[in-house]
Image 1 (cartoon, rainbow, N blue to C red):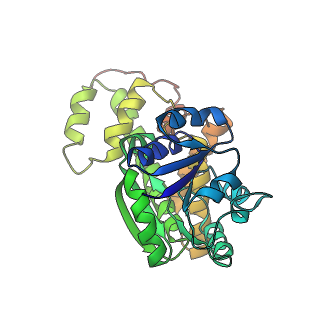
Image 2: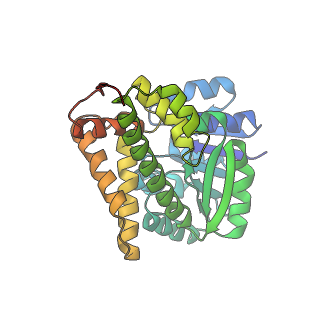
Image 3: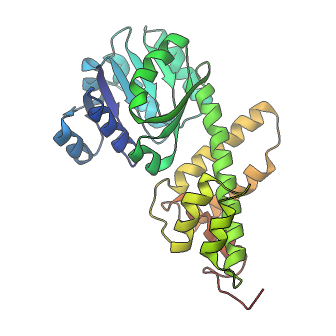
Length: 300
């Protein structure tokens, strides 16, 4: 078992860190809001007073932060990780950031003898709590092999997808697929709710055919129950979609559906819904249809 540092104890980070304690690793945790670390400390983790302190005592450090500037600040601000991490140590960034930022971070760390793996995760709060996240890893083979030993504590699936930055490119594609799926599930449910169809029976048969998906299984019930408590916030998905659009522009390809869905998410953010779960995307469909809440209007 290794000494593992973990920085960023948000909705997903906290349960991810908990799995590391359960796996027997010696865990050192830091979060700007220190109260979020207390449950983990009660389980046996050690709290750190700063990011630099995490680097001083860890063989491996995992960061799980909102965006590129947050990761860069934790690493490169005065007294940050890069000033205390020892040569030969490993940084695993599980955040979703731009591929360009990941590549730049990897280059800066390599210059100081620190290994780096960009390892964004997919599965939301449910996947983090269950320890079944999908993890897309970019980096050198040796670094990825080391990372797998730690990430296995909360992984349902892992893959080495290329050099540093590749994990973020695959995550961008993941977020395009997830957003598109959520949007079309929202459209389909909006249609069904305007009819006399038995919704539960309809979802049962849809999940038994080619239309079946994890999004339909997990997010459709939340849409129907109007449960938009954030498992993954619209604000964060908007950030991820902008990364995807930038990657598409760099690759010189057209992604019109991703562009439309990004605008729907932006409309919800402008209406003050950015803190809700991304399943709230159905609200944008409903508003375009002239009603905030679907109303049945007669028989089929």
